[in-house]
Image (cartoon, rainbow, N blue to C red; front, side, top):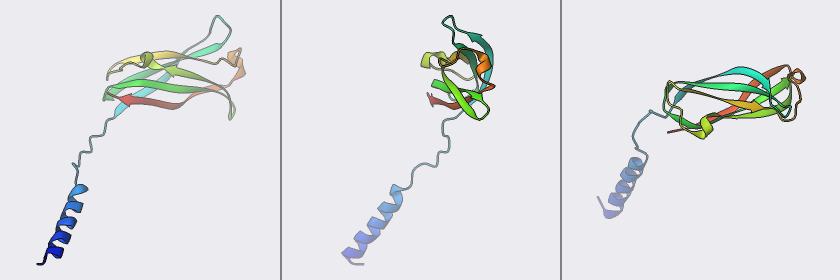
Length: 124
């Protein structure tokens, strides 16, 4: 085998090894559930809803948040934001809650339903 063929074979072997990482399918994951709690009014006149997060299994999470939509039919009339545990760690078996405030509304009667949207978190 001449030098050119040896170099070509070496290149093929090295190229195939570059793509060989570990086949570790243990991506971080977490099982979380969200539920609504109390509906109330802030002292400055804005409605709020309490959103609960319940971490039921998997990796620890942090920086957990959700947008909460106030809906009138299929129209989003306002959004609130829930930031759980001030961004701190929520471990499996723990729960947290936050108030999502609708600053552009003055009463709960201005919407029909609430829903979560774009809930995100990071893994520890």
